[in-house]
Image (tube, rainbow, N blue to C red; front, side, top):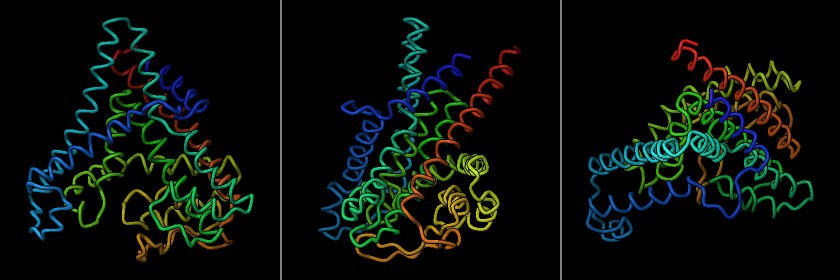
Length: 337
């Protein structure tokens, strides 16, 4: 029952404060270790950095890179879980209340509801002011695609896609893992997510060493992405958006992405708002063709950023209600209350 209270308090703290400025976030620490270990493993395999491997034309060792990537993933995820679990264990030895407060703080740091809204609304504000250059700059911090030549509708679309996808990755999926295993499992999921964002790319350097991180992210997000999509459909119903459209586009376009999970919530948002997401984008000057998601019933406008944030918040509240119920039922089952 203490975990239920910690979840609710952590969620409230996230809604009020978001990510605190000036405080080192645990995800930054995880990211630092990922970067150092990745470079260390590359040096272990080749005796030099990746840049030198490329410069000297050294033949790549795909098998060894994949093996190194597996141990990188295993060490980061297991290590993160162990550190958080250990900190909570020590806190409990000192006083149970200290453990509760620390876990509440950890849960607050894991969730990213307010921060996602805050960062995405910076783009909205610039577009509303007619500052397209400023909007392009703000959205460039959120997406990997080239933003220099995006028009107003394309900038808004990029922002909407970010909110929709991260509603699952940054908010609802962590809630589900916290519900099942508290802050340690929640942070282990964040470690998987951070690995995916740092090394799970299909570029020349990372295609092998990031292979297992990408697969682990797909596995860990399989159920949460679909759960998030259901919660977002319910949110569309309560907000009186196009609920039938959300269900229809979800059924049709939920796999319209290279990842088996990324289009789940994007499809719901596209259907609920009667817009089209996805499509061809430029990355590092090269066009990357992607399937479209949804029907272009109307152009994407900056007000859709606000509407997608409404979907984010309502689905987050619904998910927290379900997740606390899951935790309560696990507690009842374990302790026969």
